[in-house]
Length: 390
View 1 (cartoon, rainbow, N blue to C red):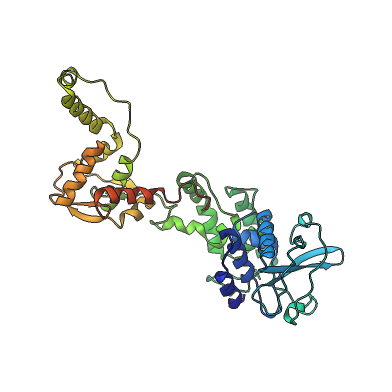
View 2 (cartoon, rainbow, N blue to C red):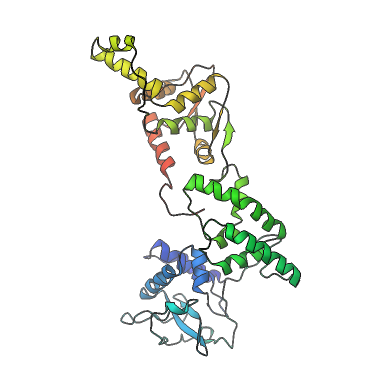
């Protein structure tokens, strides 16, 4: 790869986030000597988008004068386009009135129909042909992990064994058969034997965790393999880690409690007793007091269950996302003025207050109660509805 190319890519302004992502990965494939020849399949996997989106963003980048390309052929067959980037000396942008050049890349049927090539750039490096220099198809990198290699050099028997393991794992991925099987296979062969076995063993648990936490949003299988995402199951702070047990009145427990209080109030309440009806009939103030009492007792049954367990010295299981948020909670003494303001907020919202269990110290989001709760709720909602995949 070329550090100059990637550094240039991150300084480009006036393009969308998706275009910036495509431009960066395209630049990451640039080699100052051999050129830039990534396939659209590779760019799609790297950017975690489909090939049609890659082509659309490339066309937009070309129209903005940031990239250009020439179609490459071997006989009647199209090969990966040769790209040039705006930072290179001698770069020639496409004329504004000319439609985008051929983007056949890895898909024969994806051409725009225009086969004319742009005038070659004026420096020797960009005028190299496939015969004079072997093109860089994907980024040139040193192996990043112990046990991983760019190519599998085992015996034929070993290769068949690894291929068999891949075919056993491949249909188990959540989005099968979507995603590039070839890209996933390449990533599979880069793993060590231990990593492949761990992937096979842990993938079902990873899929179950993502479906429970994120509603079934998954990344490309090749990305899952390259990032060894199943290892996140072992990190208690990861979004796919299972819930963990926490003591009552701990930071994580308090975050769980506040999270439950922010949910809609339950409406299935028992009918009022004769005493409550009599009391509520006295005047408006008494009726309001009865309503608040019932609201605290029946409005949030899960919170009252947490309180009952806390009174018996029992904690609760907390999701890792809540545990991470709770790490910023501040320590508040139960008899302090700040604790009194938190209690007043509970009263205003009709929430049940904490039980008396002998705990002197409480934990709440930092700041004044109203602002702190708004910030806490905003953090809970971060990422909800986004398209990022696990």
